[in-house]
Length: 116
Image 1: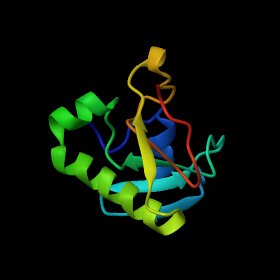
Image 2: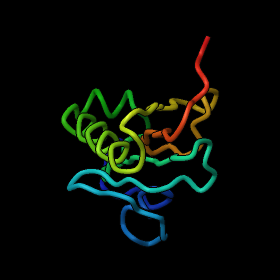
Image 3: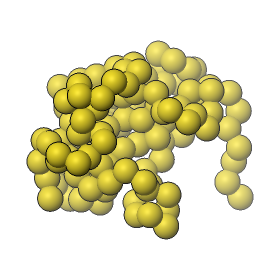
């Protein structure tokens, strides 16, 4: 399912301006705003303006849009941190996805714990 507005979707409401967010950057196709429960000194969500349920559906349908999300994330990391960052897409509830509008978690700003 894709649409520019899914009426019950929290992120669609943020994109539409119906719910306020601390927006740090935007483009024609994506928006970046601070996470309300940050897990790093810089924790920003980068969200396409069009609704896709997860990154797999997004990548299968709109590769240019996915590239735009990654490009916006890179710009935000350069602006708010030192350009070094972690970008995470959670896909499915067992992986931690709680809002089913694809979004990337941009984590930066200091030494992030590694994965072993």
